[in-house]
Structure formats: structure tokens, C-alpha cells
Length: 245
Image (cartoon, helix red, strand yellow):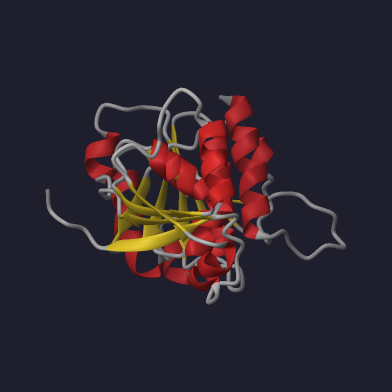
């Protein structure tokens, strides 16, 4: 087995779901005495700590791991390896009615984590992100995703535009979410293969990415409100499309 690079995650759900995921290699777990009891409560029928190196620490000792990102560890820290990056071309073979979400220069780990949580909750088939912009070792991302990184296909690609071009050739429609669009997303019949494209929090979709967009749509909101946070927008869209399906 080749050794992948490892990193630390924090938070009860993030650590417990990593331990439950058979595809995830967990190297070490750092717990307080209280959090050990909590793990057994969460999983009474399966010993999640079997064959895992477990170290008991005080809350204060665990605080050191979270200082830079200012998050609560809840008594749970783990050192884990990256999952294998799924291959987009392989994944779509022989499949229909797929819904992917694609992020164009969205970089905030808390927003991406929340979006991953919503995508997993509402059966989105995968997330397409640019490898260089994806904070893949962020404790904040794992904490915000609340364990859902373990349940969503995350396709890290080298070029978003090339991936969109490829998917359009494979019968995917690309819907760009833009507050200035004239068309409400609920007016669309969400059938077939679709990509939901969201731009960065500040600048929206990049001009050269818009070239690969088939339709521009928006979420109708109160005119007095400028915009919604991207993870809130995504949750609304994912829920609606899941209901349609």
C-alpha cells in the first residue's frame, strides 16, 4: 500500500465518519476520556477504534491542534490520509440522470464544507473543484462538512473549463447561477444530466467559464436583499432538485 500524505481533522462528526468509512485510512486518533465514551455511544455494535492507534489527551492538549483555524474539536482529533480522487471520465460511464455541482474559484473552506454537507444530504452525485483551489486539508472544511466529505464524490480536476467542455460533449447541460439572470431555477425541468455551476463569493462566474454555460439561472429572493451566501443558495437548489427527481 503506497503511503499518501496525511493531515489532521477535528470535530466529533468529522472524526467518527472518517472512522466509519472503510475507504479512509485513519492513522491515529486523539481523544479525551469523555469523547471515547461518546464514540462507543455513537457506534454500539461496532468497535470503530479497532486496530487504530488511540492517544488520550486533555482538552487543553487538543486545543493546540486547532489554534490556527479557531475551531472547536469537541474532544476529537484524527490524523488521516487522503481518499483516492475518483476519476470523472470513469464515473460517468453508463450512468444517466446525474447531477454535479461545480465550483468556479470558490475557496472559503467553511462555505465549501457546508456545501458538501448539503450536497451529500440531497443526493447530489458529485462535486467538481479545481485541484489548486480546493482546501483539501482544511480542518474547517471537514468540521463544516460534519462528516459528509466521506459520502460525496469529490472530483479534483486540473482545469474547470476543460471538464465542463468534456461533460457537455457527454450530454450534460451546464446551468450557471447568476443573480442577474432573468430565469428562475424553479422554471427548469431538472431532467437528464446537469451541472450546477456556482461562482466565487465575491466575483461570480468568470467570463471565460461563462462560455461553457448553456443556461443562466437565479434564485428569486427579496429584492431588498443583495444576495445569499453560496452554501445557502446551494442547499436551496439541491433540495429543490432532489424533490423533483
